[in-house]
Image 1 (tube, one colour):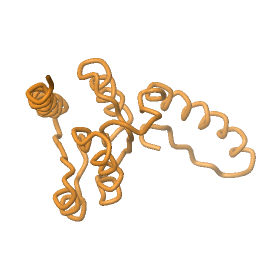
Image 2 (image 1 turned 180 degrees about the horizontal axis):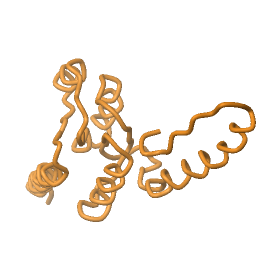
Image 3 (image 1 turned 180 degrees about the vertical axis):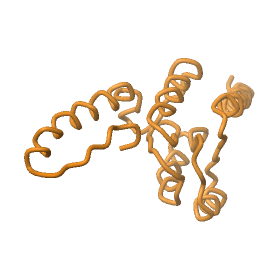
Image 4 (image 1 turned 30 degrees about the vertical axis):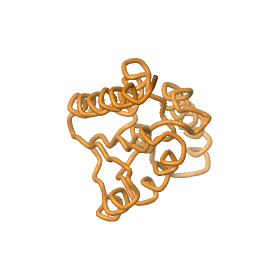
Length: 149
C-alpha cells in the first residue's frame, strides 16, 4: 500500500515479527480516511497518488465544500473508475465527477468519460484542483438555484 513501510522477509520468524507491524501500519494509515467515504454511495470519486494527498483532498471536500465522496482509489484513472463515477449520473448528476490529483488519466478513461458524461478534474497542484472544483460547485449551485422556486 502506498505510504506504508516495506520489509524484507527472510524466514517464517520474520513473517511473524513483521506481520503485526504491517497490520498496525495499515490501520494507522487508513484510519484518517475511514468515515470520509459516504456509505450510501453518493458523492464524487477521488483518486490521488498517495494516501497523504488523499487525506488532504477528503478533508477539503468534507469541510470546505461539504461534498460527499462515493469512492476513493490511489493510482491512475482507468476506464473502470469512470464507470464507478458514472453511477452518479442516475442519482445526482453533479456528482458524476472524478477528482484526480497527481495521477495520470488513461486514454480509455478519457474516452469513456467523454462518452458517458463524467467530468474529470485533474491537476498536479492540489490548490489548483481545489479551485477548479470549487468553481464547478459554485456553478452547479447557481444553476440549481435558478430552477428552484
